[in-house]
Length: 443
Ligand SMILES: *Cc1c(COP(=O)(O)O)cnc(C)c1O
Image (cartoon, rainbow, N blue to C red):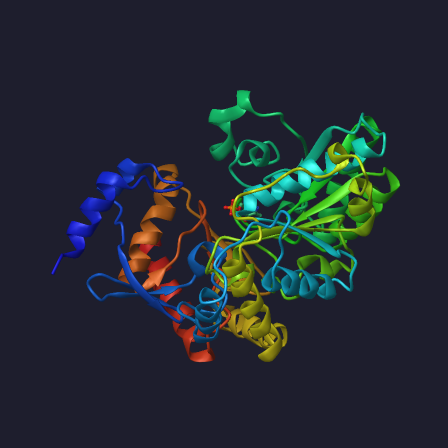
């Protein structure tokens, strides 16, 4: 039988891994996965790892989920793919209907792609083009939030404010305006999270005033900016953002690629602020972590801006796998689990269990900013030595593997974004192991 090390060598020879300085694999392990079951991933040696970050935030109901598997097997024998221009099919129709219903039909039109970055670019293009079709050709600029992450393709990177990902490509990008972050960690003495949010909203208003008539849309990750390190803000920011967008006639794009699908406690994160955006992007969890699928939901007003006899006023964007039936079927099976198992309510309890399991952290002086939003839990490690700080994440990742845990801190922000199928015992064990790893890395 081929050894684990041999698989690793073959991978390093021919697979160029994402978001990775490949040379780091001289010291950081690469794990060849043989199979997955529920919350566990198994390597080629039979060692298991609790997937505490849902395989890059996509897996909601565990690996090899019997219900999603069954739906996909059924779909495979019916239709694996058909083009969505000039043709349609049951999975894409039913999915679009269900998603529309989940917004009370506020966002009744869904446009499909395969990955999150493409969904973001679709929203940007649709906003720009909708204004243009309405004769507002000056609205060409975009605003994003400090620390924002919206994907790695050139258009999405233009509204991304993570310098590590962006800096090499600066000259290629048509940069957006970057406004102050509502991150609650920025609270000054005596300030609440809501105060920080309102202070940030005032900065946004300043830019909207300065660029009046020039801005097409503001794009935001509602409630939690995940990729920058689980930066969380008060929902009052979203309400103020909605008001400002209405006042200055600017579209609001909610990138719910990471925070949608129940992650923050409601199905859509925007629901927690009782607002709807003009565009809502979904990907990651929507297919249960099974197949690449993304989509942009939008309003009737935007849809009508393109509805015309003139082909050039239409939205002539496409991807080969737009609305892939298998991916849509996986999404339908995922939404069925939400309904059948009353997942949003169940998650409320799980989220409390996670909070209790980590209650001890609040007194730990090596820890700052313990924070939680639904099924996202995070804290920041206080590491004063710069050399140790810069390797914290990699050392944590390696130590976690030894404890049967898959966790990848972002800088010094340690976080959990687990699948929704954890039970109480597993939550307790996950918290205990996380603390053991933390002890070891801080020692
Ligand atoms: C992951 C992510 C994206 C990009 O999605 P990809 O499928 O990786 O292109 C965009 N926005 C947010 C908020 C994300 O978390």
